[in-house]
Length: 349
Image (cartoon, rainbow, N blue to C red):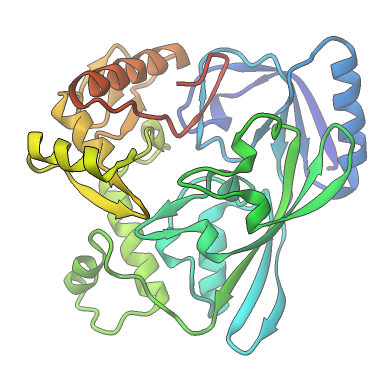
């Protein structure tokens, strides 16, 4: 279809929170051939006084729309999967940014490739994965990242980014910081292997495999186990609106973690480099928010990290509840939680 332009576009079906909002202008990009036209249209829009950079929209799974966005929205719909290089067991694959993440994981497994199995069933698109440096069950995207291609929407110039360029951190990358909004990720390359090096010691993976009587698991077995665990713990956005884990697990200094664990027995902590990661869900639950509902906004009854839309919550309601949670955790534990989703139409938490 090429480049699709829509004014006053409804966004309820394009964000997993199910927020009923509208975009002033939405562009849907389905072909790289249409990038020059898109860049020209965005420059023209900016020349008419719309100074805000465009919002790049993938699966809408890491997004909270607090108010109708005034900046133009670019919906990424590029498709394509391929193996680009193979030497022995080492394989590099390339995926277009508009591909959905979990089907990519399943495609790699169908090709006999291991590495992404612990990241099964994470929502969203391939293009968003390096921006967020997605991670789960002891594996992060950066562990298998090779490079990505992106286009400067202001100039139309393309370039490749390697891992150093991306400056990956915990749920972080260079693309989440000031000045990076101009970059549109178009494709991502990942390093995988035909020999599985399974990571089984994080969370409930081993127990889930044992429950299924699997003694010698394959990468597909691990992906299936991770998917079952996620389905039990996390609500389906098709059933109740949510963006998965709303807050990051904080990283704090070891001395602070020791003092906090002494004062708050049972606080889950994990070493993370020179720092210690502590459980945001545990702290939120101890503050009494698990299962709470305020109007149509709430905290899921099975997972305190997941904020939910019970049907007709506005983004402002979700944001107000998130702020209340953040303030309560800061008061009790002395830690300021940081939100994972991008907040549109209001200041970031």
